[in-house]
Length: 226
Ligand code: UTP
Image (cartoon, rainbow, N blue to C red; front, side):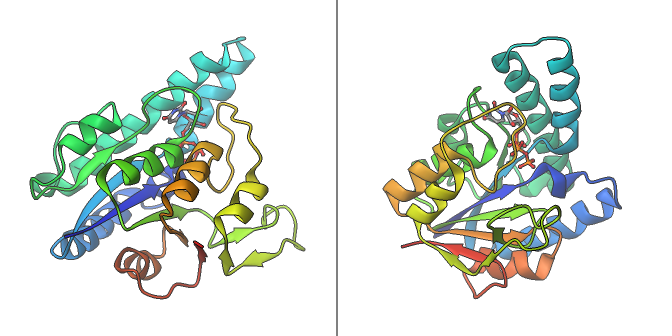
């Protein structure tokens, strides 16, 4: 059975706009799509993570300490999604990729958050995709595609329909900082490039787009491959 990893940005899970309703609709989409493929969801920390990281930075926390708080927020979001999925999902949040991979093949959706400091949940999703032999990663974000700059801040930002793995790496650089928000993280980009796992970047709150991406159908967002 096809395996698909979804990297679900925290900004999609709890933007503060009818979140419970969205999670219910998302859960029923996953129920439908999980009949024909095995699904893994890695949840981001969103504004909960950013709030704690920003205050922690004011209090002179180290990057490692800030990352650790970010990880806690991602696991809290993972728990929320598990609640929405009910008996469709395993009801414990794996702390490592190995633990998540060991939950595979039991007919349940596996939901996790972050693992260790030094990367984001996009990195975790790439590592999990490698570990379970996923055919693709769906990166569900708050923007609808990859752009040359943040389209919310720069109206001249170029929108990409397709990127090679190398172009993705060039776009990202190598630095990780707690709470930093690029379209994917550098560790994840290295893994998908080495393992040649396609990444589909879509607007996470657009469930039609999400559905297409999970099924591997053409999307409006960006396809990263080749
Ligand atoms: P996210 O994966 O949510 O990062 O983790 P993000 O890219 O900032 O946010 P989204 O994609 O918009 O939701 C939140 C923070 O938690 C720490 C990092 O500091 C990250 O920025 N983190 C997360 C880790 O250190 N390790 C992990 O495995 C996951």
